[in-house]
Image (cartoon, rainbow, N blue to C red; front, side):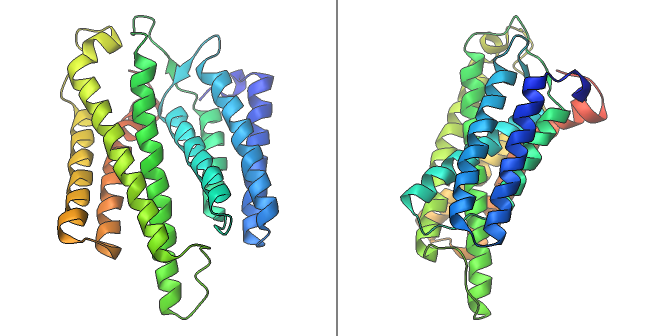
Length: 267
């Protein structure tokens, strides 16, 4: 944790983004969708500037918190675009709260300096991985909204989603499908070009990160096959999505959290 060493620009962008996310959450809670959407776009812009300054600055760093921060930014981007395509889609306050938390977590735990021996293709490899993180995170948010709406419908209450359940379900599994493709590309690049990517002859190895990654890939593959061949829907499909996303979270962010925070060392 090196909050004290953060630059004034980093602190300003982080606090501004967190405040904008908080405003989005407040607007969503008060059903003020215009305020909420404007705040989401402002938060997304400030959050993006923060990521650029921290990941591509004079001393680029990366770790579990920056990975989660980029994931939250991608979720915000997808939601902002999606709310433009579907104006009736309501901003979930939880989404804004997660964004604010990710920004502040990245401020507290900026990660470790990138290795100078790493390949220039490493950022692309990370981009594929983080993009898959983001798409699966978007799918999880949609699945949560869908499940919450189903429960409210059973209780004869307003669903509060702004979209029909079938549309929400279709969007959820589109994100799962694209995320699965990106995750597959990430794993293939890591397994076949790990040595070249990391500039380390011992980079390619079977460890807990690789194990969780493969388990998550198998889980998502089972989900897509089950939906296509056996018509998995509803709670069964959502549970499998949650399990696969949890395994994927443990694969990188979880392992780096243990190394950076609990053990106090970097890779």
